[in-house]
Length: 629
Image (cartoon, rainbow, N blue to C red):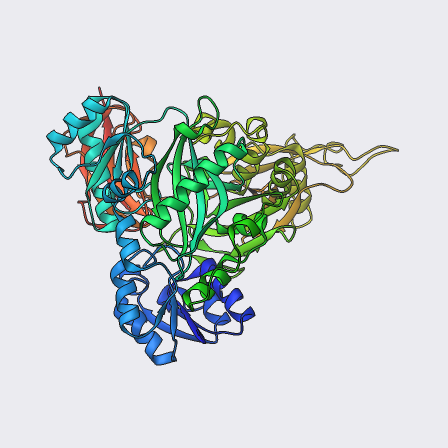
């Protein structure tokens, strides 16, 4: 029986596990890095132990430090959460060797499903359909190129270890294969310590369907139905839902049965997710859904399954780890309504989804839906970890109701000065095709400009900014001042008329003066600016033009700068090279993602200021270009 639980993780998943542990009467232990010393999950635990510096490899991935924390606090069980050490079979073995309870699947099951090529061989033997492709041992680039040609382009290169889209590249033609293979291998090595890849046929209209499975130590395995995770950007899930739209009872039965067979094939115990790729070009069909991989841990999107089944999956994990049988049989698990989850990231969609870091001076999340978050107002988003800052989860009697509730919740998000994707999420959820269930993994890419493009402030936003600034200091009028035009508040039996000039992103904009209440919420910024929130977006205004900024110019002037702190993982050009507009110059890794920095115009590389392996700060000059004559 577990009495004291150490969660070897951070942020929202640590807080979520603590919530259930406390409800079950368990004592809790948090671990933290220097970057997380003041984090909410640290304060909420009964005990907390420092692991080390901010870098994950020196703290959350430091196995000996985690074990030492368990010894020091008397913890008798370790829950790994997701990410970090959650799918590390060696860690699971040392935990049990210490005499502690491992809240996760057996190490043998983790290993069996940890390598995609070996896992697919197991699935074929178990009668689970797999995606056609090359899953062999050879990693010779020439051999892989020949195999890609045999499969037929376009193809997918995928990392043998890990998941989450890291180490994955779509290749359209043979001429692009070598470069894509190198990028995939670098990313896989950085993320998983293993650069091996496999090749798969590319499915033209893919849907990402996954099934939540659970096993116990008494030989029982059940499923808790499916989730659809097709709304993705760069292979990272953005919005997840349960059940999957367009899923018939017949197809659901076939897919869920295949997932149970997959779990039984590795004697699975605990929570796991079997992921499938579906060819949705002709709707969901049982003969067009193939096994991709199995995640041997609790998923980020587990709350949607909890919402539609009424079950606490963390409680199931803890009970199963303690030797208890599964709480329910398959026939006792039922679906109720529809649930959706949106991942709120600290990133700027209008700037190519670049991660946004810094202090959360203003941080307001909706109260109308379930919110799982690891940060709070006054905290900070660190460059050392994943940029997800919260999950918003809505439940309703139908898919459309759940979507509308979640869209409204995303529109209520107020965060500043860190940028978020809240407005982008709301627009995804309100898209007419999405509401009709017309989803696939290319949904966002096909509508990227409409969903993620920079938005012009509405008249309501401009009017709110004008009111806010006028309440602080006088603002220059848009028209030349005269004895009558200056009387912006003067009117006879009519509304106030007039306009004022504001500045946004260094550009002058004209704002109307209106009377009466406005729909937008206003936040007075400490720096003398006004930030107006509307539909999940944040618009910042000042009453005077910004001061000139000294230093290096923007990329359009030939200077390529680091948009965030990170590590240079590849330099693709040398001084003197001729480059085309859009050609990759430097690849920067930050917040667990690679970001390709490209040439803004055709020209010649004047200088390269960094090398692969360098750590750089935001704003550092990486390269300089001169335009072609």
